[in-house]
Length: 167
Image (cartoon, rainbow, N blue to C red; front, side, top):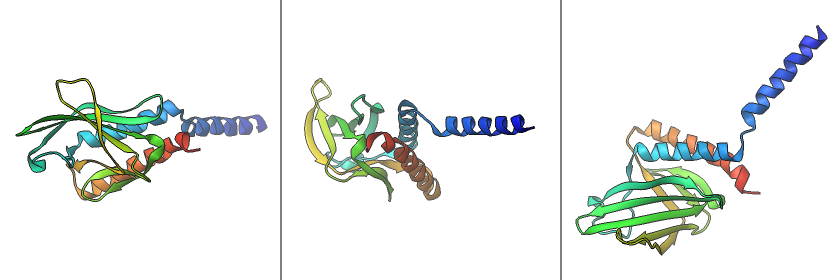
């Protein structure tokens, strides 16, 4: 009977450890999946410093990803009546402070760690345009309660991710 009792606790310990002990790539993948799902279910944010902001069409060229150096990035295309702009946004994962939800879902850094690069669609070279401390991901399609839950889910994924980036 004692062996069955010990085996039960050993099995419980292994199961708990496996559920909690995610690897860095697994946690990164979970964060990216959550983030890109929110992007897919949102009206893209029309960034500042672009002409005719209300009439911009924003499409994702490269979804969010995390480089081996811990840089979160995405590339978007902004099309307006006056032309097209390709913008790449980068931020070190370790610099992200928290996820916010007001009208938009987005993330904020403690300093201007978010870099905005632009390029002509016919060029391969990105040029840094400005830095900021906020990135607006987009306006959720769904209701306020769902958007608040998306914020909670993304913050939880970020908190798990930051365990690997903030020491």
